[in-house]
Amino acid sequence: MTFKLPLLALLFVAAGAMAADSDRDSRDLAKALAGRTAGKPFDCVNPSWAGSPQIIGSRTLIYHETGRVLRNDLPDACPGLDDDSIIVSEVHGNQLCRGDLFYTLQRGSQIPGPRCRLGKFTPYTKPKS
Picture 1 (cartoon, rainbow, N blue to C red):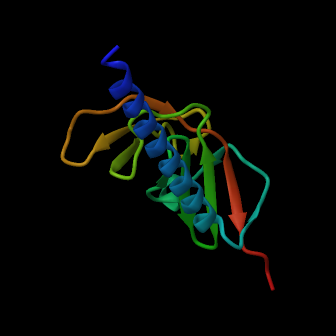
Picture 2: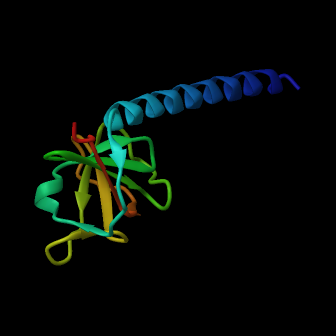
């Protein structure tokens, strides 16, 4: 019985931290897509145009291109995906496509994280005025 109260307190602290992360992720996503309109999703992108993605939570990557932003919602959460992760994409051919795998490296580490799968790329562009 004496362990129930500390365990319950620990669960409340963890739930609060998760809610704070979720709020921050929502703000980061809104900021990345602000003033832009979603286009029709597509399967592949030229990796040299996409550059390094911005990581938002454990399921969303934002690629910044000239004139547009590409949102990639991963089909599954990617463990270990956080602001300090370096993403290493496994490109086969000359395109980065839905279903392609990537893994993460933590800065200063050479041990790869789990492999994760990309989703479709949704372009977001600013309306022409």
